Picture 1 (cartoon, rainbow, N blue to C red):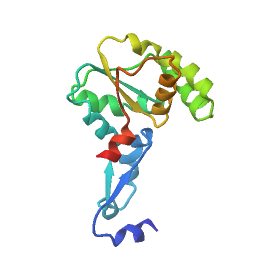
Picture 2 (cartoon, one colour):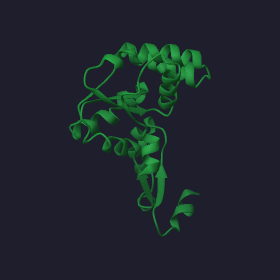
Picture 3 (spheres, rainbow, N blue to C red):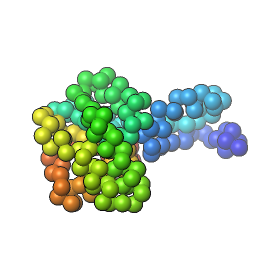
Picture 4 (tube, rainbow, N blue to C red):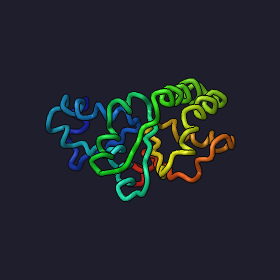
Length: 170
């Protein structure tokens, strides 16, 4: 079905994948397609587009993501190649961030999101030189808004890059 759908197209089809972690699997998935179909797809990498916003950035960048995205090194590799000064939150903070995403945002519990989100991100307020947060999970901008609106954390001094917004604006 895919072959017949794309086989007759003259121009490449723009493809946007809104899950950061899924970007780790794109190269393997593309290898499964017949060569003529792969040429018909124009994949827009939200990882690369978000990283473009950091190349000229002063200060440090933190990538807030799921553990899967973190372990895939998608952002770490591209940011290092662009000489961006980045750091990762601690493993303990990462576990709290996952709880904020899954027990909070995905479960519809603002209380759990704020509780775990605060535990995950409270150290960012005091991080010297931090200027940019990459919200590398579709739930992270929601979490940041909840934390900011609840006045529990002051994150307004940081530039937040939302890869979904960046790729749509690109």
